[in-house]
Amino acid sequence: MLGLIFLYWIGKYFYNLAEEYDKNKWTYAILGIVSYYGGTIFFGLIIGIILGLFYPESIEGLDETMLSLVMIPFGILSCYLLYSYFEKTWKKNKPVNEMDQIGNEKELI
Image (cartoon, rainbow, N blue to C red; front, top):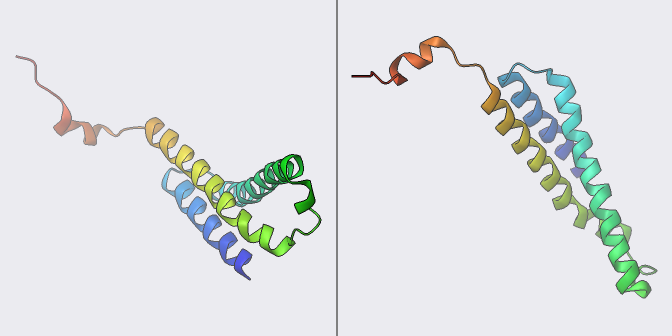
């Protein structure tokens, strides 16, 4: 149930971001969800490799539920990084209206 709530909010934030910058909304909502799962899988593999190299006896008694709870922040981190990247690049590349520039022009003397 907790996973469904995360998926809803992640998709909603990416959907709203894409809507704000006139991008394909559903594509970016799905991409946000994929980034969550990709982040959990990637960091799960890294943690598994580290545990396997340095503490091989701990892998046998590893609780899968605890591991999935530990991976949630890494999935959220990967979503946040992708969201920040999209927001920064789209904000930089957003076309500026001429009406927005009227008050910002400096007069040369």
